[in-house]
Amino acid sequence: MNILKKSAFYTILFLSIITSAQAQKVEDIFSNTDYAVTWMGIDYSHAKVVGSVSQWGGTPPVSKNDLKERYYAAWNYLFIDEADKYNIAEMLHRKYVNTDISMIKKINDNASVDSVEVKITPYYGLQDIQSFVKTYPAIEKPGIGLVFITESMNKTAAEAFYHVVFFNTQTKEVLLHERMRGTPGGSGVRNYWAGSYYKVIEMIESTTYSKWKAKFGGKANKPAPTW
Image (cartoon, rainbow, N blue to C red; front, side, top):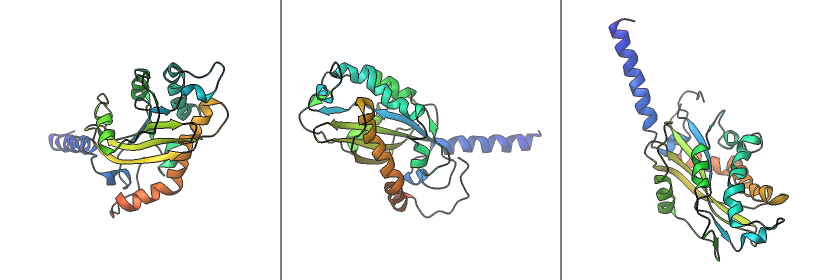
């Protein structure tokens, strides 16, 4: 490779890296570009249980420690063990979405459950969500991260609330955020609450994604994506 060709090659490579690191616009989620989206899992570190966890049943009844030691991981591994059902790529109308739940798993493993039980449903705003994302550790992969941040689970009202969050993995800037309600359903504690985020996935795939794209997607006509 001669000097000119080598210089051009490294210039293109450098610009590609910079472009990936600067995925800071909400349009990048929807436009036909090569921006990678990585599914990082469900963050339960700020989740609240309205009422008592023991009301969820189980033999012996579910405890607060069971949440962290058993269920937080189990709910996330469904995206790997049953990927055809909990399909994030289909939810986003993409051919492929990366999956790396390692960061969120560590966060959930270290979450405190001392004050997880509350009397009323909390409400996290955008500022709260941005502050949560800012505390995430450094992420090596450039592009767009996607997490569901769990707000609350209420057995009496048969509902759970999740914040669907797209963010720039380099700057931790939230690009798109929406609070969504899911109705749980299924046998056993794991499947019952998994049903709540499955409903959110279905809702996004069927209607919400189109609304997001119409609002934020921009009008650029670009070549077909390669992801």
